Length: 297
Image (cartoon, one colour):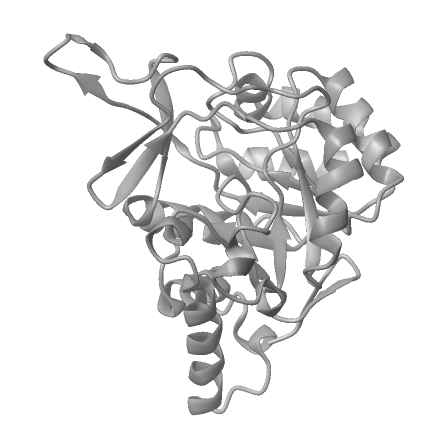
């Protein structure tokens, strides 16, 4: 079950997705988080953020909409407090970094370079931030410039998280790869909406929100497969993964590892079910190493 991504060894390919797992401490009360391959931190920004006002989450058929707005303590507080606690969880630590400008990304990367995080996941795709993130994740040329600039200052392996709302997901992946990304993660949430019909207004203050959960899985799976055909760097697949069968599908589609997000809200220890199910599948099928089935589709 071990996988190696950019020189970082994961005990298994199951990673907690950013924004759904906090910094791991709360979930450690439900199960030993050390059993996970890794954790992608809550989305960080150079300055602390209170997040969006109003409703932040709403259930949808087979999924959920969220408009949290990157509420976080800021990079400095993360390094000072949260990171020390994460180190005790004994798993790979990925710092998810957002920003409203390239300059903010660079400032964040410089600070994280000096920390104990194993990898940095550059979030160029969050649909809930009014400035920066959305534009960077839609146009390939803008993403190229951003990743190229950030990479100049990044001494950690750099994962770039792609938005499914990109104009062309394959072109976006190629641009990020050419700009220096060491790995890609995809997909982030889809742009969605909910309306309060009684008050005749949008449910969310930002009007639009991010759709996640099993509803998006077939589309996310397709995008991972498409991207795997045009780049030669590792891919971390995510989007609606809820079962071990889902996870195996993503690996067969081309993912070196997977992230689990919305499903954590349904069953806090669901990632253990996924890890155990994947391992059992490999043994039953006499597959010696999970890497042997990666990208076979």
